[in-house]
Image (cartoon, rainbow, N blue to C red; front, side, top):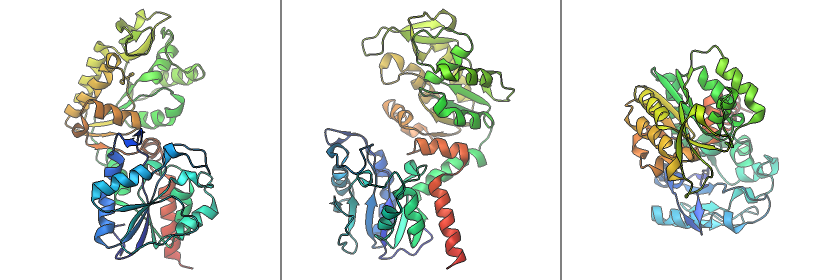
Length: 390
């Protein structure tokens, strides 16, 4: 975007405004504030700006009020002190005043978005002089508004947020110093297997938490009681443990268990070899946490995706909070991504302690694994085709 002549151009900017709403009120505006520098560039260049985004996972082709972006348009208006006009029906075209900012209704209400419909892609491309892809959090999806539109746009480019995300993640590969540690939490090892494999070839230490850690423990022959784990992934987990790798998968020596998962559940610290068959493992124990924290503090590069316990409930949050505190004190370069990870960082008030917090979840993981994303590839192909000419 910074390389183009933007003055008085009509911009269609794909942004990520998939923010949490509670009774029509925005509970976290992090993603909205992340697009403000992009809006500022467009306003300073006297551009007409069309914003487009998704919200949640509504049934395609059907309006659902709980997923409407109208409250977001009102919120941005207050934030930038400039009207953002909300347009609910746009497929048949609409008038756009020079210098105006509009936000279109949730693109997932439009048929063909998820299927990358050529018809919808062309309709989107016809709205603008320049398409700007600035939704890193959706860049891993081959949808009409993140992928197909690029092919049919006269000019397409990456926005400043997209560039910042890519540069920040690339920094762990280009400028990182050892020791490098990665923390990967989550419920299922199957959904993060490629990430774990990719990181294990690159990092010195690997901490696994949540249901992923439970699967590892079960594969080691440990009792995990009624804890969440993946039976079908036990063989894969065993191979991972036994793999001849320079990466050290850090061990769990104690855990926090309970009989239920709620605010009133009584927690208990147990040695990893003392877990009962009716226990639920809901956090790492203090001895394990101490070892993890010391290793993190000595690391020069930290990659974090996923909590190590049920941090939303206070009695099961100590492990995740300890990791967050250690990262903020390590003094090296740290990057974190994923919805639950960001929620944990915000809960513990440590947003200033992380070098870079990504706006992406799935895109964050996919870019770390593959070093590219579908939207990026589409932008590269678009640029190549422009160079070739007709």
